[in-house]
Amino acid sequence: MNLGYFYLYLVYPILRTHIENVLPLTDAEFEFIASKFRPKKFSKKQFLFRQGDDVPYVYFVASGLIMLTFDDEQGKQHVVSFAMEDWWESDYFAFFSKTKATMSLQCLEETEVLCISLEDYQTLCAGSHKIEHFFLEKANRGHIASQQRILSFITSSAKDRYERLLKRYPALFQRVPKTLLASYLGVSRETLSRFNS
Amino acid sequence: MNLGYFYLYLVYPILRTHIENVLPLTDAEFEFIASKFRPKKFSKKQFLFRQGDDVPYVYFVASGLIMLTFDDEQGKQHVVSFAMEDWWESDYFAFFSKTKATMSLQCLEETEVLCISLEDYQTLCAGSHKIEHFFLEKANRGHIASQQRILSFITSSAKDRYERLLKRYPALFQRVPKTLLASYLGVSRETLSRFNS
DNA sequence: CTAAATATGTGACATATATCACAAAGCTAT
DNA sequence: ATAGCTTTGTGATATATGTCACATATTTAG
Image 1 (cartoon, protein in one colour):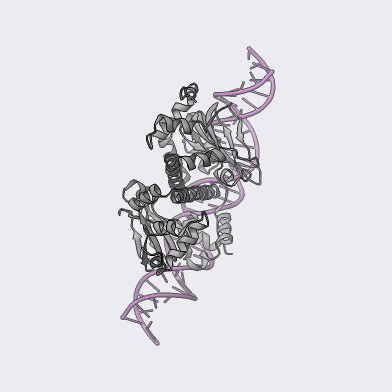
Image 2: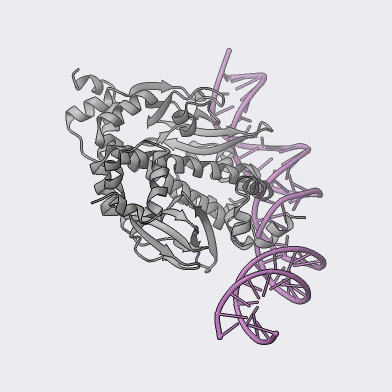
């Protein structure tokens, strides 16, 4: 299979650049990796999967914006995380344990992803020390980022969390309705609105 | 080197059992792994490292109990996590990026650990596909656990978080002062005390 | 272009939690 | 056994945030 094939889809070079930020790859290595990823395109509001579904893939977001949400017993929706260009997302627990999703993954904009199944993920890791190392690196960074977010819940008021988010990801405030940002921050929409005054 | 050497320290079999919960190992493989870990013992209140120090190791807790804490600008201490028998802990960001610790790691009881340096960690991963896979598995589970905890901050009141913690880790309430549990839950000591009535 | 749906801002009030102060109980080291 | 430190509980009060209600602005679909 010719490497050129993958470049018909603009998403593949984005993945390659993303991986090579962590470690360099030969063309052959990338071709092997790319052969395990499938491109998919979703429209705004479409679900990649819903609570209760199987979780067939881990997703690499090449363009667009998606959110991971959890619906509680009272039917209230909570935003667990956003994922934009260059981020990985899934319900990792359900994906790895082959259980049903406890969360939903939904598009906030038209979004292009590259996705990989558990089987292909395992084949890839077994066949390439490098890519396994890359995924370890990503998992560690994800873990660290989560710990930072936990710390912000323990140490900061909602207003402080809001201001830090605004500073770090100003673009989010243009792209995401305030109701969802409020949910992500763990406050009511009304309280978040009042932070502006 | 004889495998028996490692078994002079009771901590090594604990590590082996722990790893074999994820994947089986031959004696030779475990010997290689064990050769990279050093046993250390700390007394109650002793610091494994403090905010501002280098973070020389990742720690596997064989016995005892430690906590990861963060001191904010006002000098207030916050508990980020507890780690008891069979858990891994460190300031992972500082460890991997070789920067100074943003958190402290301190013993709540006399504690025995096995620790590994970044250099040995990398040697281990480069030399054993299996152990790299094991660490990937751990990192993923850590990431998942953190996400669960974030979810509990977004969706639940302090009282609910308290009750869930009590149910899941009843032993903690015997082993850890309430002030520290309150900090871990992100509430004041007084509020936590009132949950009992 | 229009109607409906969605998103946002704000007042009034309820509730959860923090803070401060103090006393009692339990540990710890000599 | 004693003095001092740490831990815990609880009242009074302050503050942050949630909830409900409604008006207005903005976006979306036909």
